[in-house]
Length: 577
Image (cartoon, rainbow, N blue to C red; front, side, top):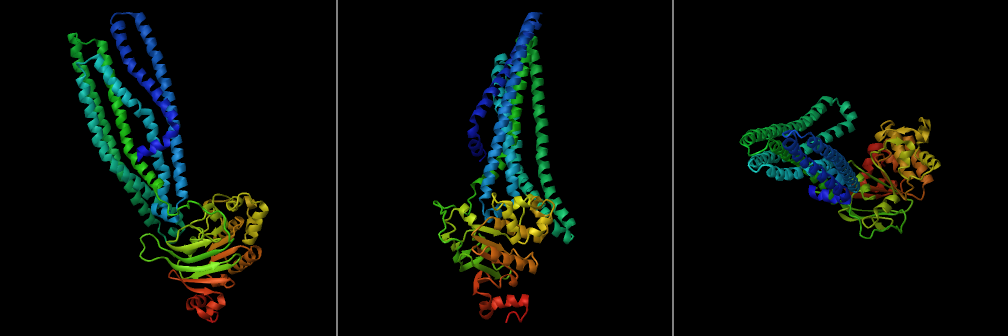
């Protein structure tokens, strides 16, 4: 997967890679040429006392060294640019892919894991690209070129290279082979740390309310210790590798000096040749060492690439139609036709054979006990899930055949847990429609019964909202979420238990304003409080994922035991008669 990922995302930047190859090749040639010049200075300049030759050859070496520096800088610049652009493109594609996931895929991967894959995992691939373009390209050039030139300097000493290089490769292969499973375990444990920390930050109020800080600290400590243990094992292998590599390197240098000294003493090798051979041995082993260092990064990057590939290759359960419908003939209409939904692997469906309809401008309420499937039901309307049986029609079109953007433009959703983004009141409201004017925002706030508290906030519409809307109360957050949905100017408004955080008087005023100001908008209301839905045109009663009652408040009181029990539990026995 790593190779496929690199080929796919580096293809547009082939010219940068070509530049890296050209300048790294020039840099490697310069590095390989310098020892030969050094040998010439010793053999033809120093030994003969020829100062002019030393100055002339030394000047050439300075020029070549300067050229090597310039070539290395340019190659590194090209490598960095290619790596950064690769990281940007992968992150863009992963984000776009995740944005198209339904709640099913997000739950399957886990939010913490998806964040890690789009940050740390992409960073590993990006770092490998950078290091490979910087070192892995030059390493084989230095190693191969060094071997050729070393043999040219002295064939009789080349057996030392034949022993040292395989020894170095064997050591690197053994250690790196043990690192691969550790890197995968490290990334998985990193997911665990992110997941635990995300849960604790999100549920900090619950943790404090139940005095669970010590237990949660222990839970985080366990996850943190797990990643530390794996990291220590990886570090131990790193610590083991470098001493062994340096041992091989130093023993090889000693061998060159020992056996080369005997050759010099016998007159078979000149002193300059011995120095050049030693430098080539250092270049060869340095090249092998760089390649070994790079191969240590490859396993972790390969694990990260596999994890990224899993996200990019994941089949979204929400399939886009080949010829999506963008026009809805029955504006504002919603219809469920024997709709059934099951979660993957579940023994029983959450919803079974749901059938009801809502015409333009009507208000349809959905009630039922906890776990009856109310939230899942309304999630099928904006196609957050796909039905596993039957169909859901919006505007006379099956939602599976509709263009998703066109579908979402017709629906304003107020979720059970309202979420506000970091910014201002205005930026959050304009999340529904960017071109909305201030007057339209204030009008939506008036309908949602939020204009009073927004006017009292410092800055009004420009008042700051923290992440998640934690600097406003639950009721205020709920009303801002309702106002945002109104600003969207939808044909259908879906309220998923959106009035539970409001007091009875605010609830009543808000509903009256909705019915008065938005008479043409279809309203689907999930509610816990019966007082919220008594004036609905139609009430759907759910029980265990099935429709057990359908009618007005008065009709259901007379004919439906389930609805009557709900009313009696909230309003008393007299109200249920």
